[in-house]
Length: 111
Image (cartoon, rainbow, N blue to C red; front, side):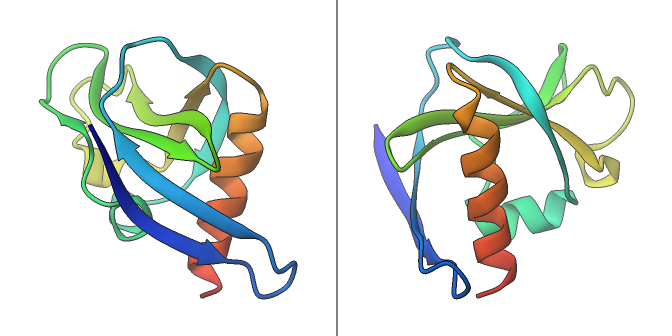
């Protein structure tokens, strides 16, 4: 199941970023980090796909950005509520996931 979240345009570069929420099949792995607050991520990418407060990941966004599968998640933040986390892991099947998440997030900030 996929749901369009938004299309962001970076006014500086003219790039468009189509952000779609989708259920994950668990096929992504760590690619990099993003520094952002929980509320910023919710504003940019919608409510998390996973939010259960247990396990190694308490909160996760499962996204497709311009056709590339990307995840944003709080890895091993045991006891830290998601609204206190600043360093979020970016997952994907290719390193390009980091670049796409970062650029889509910056386009959201600059909208």
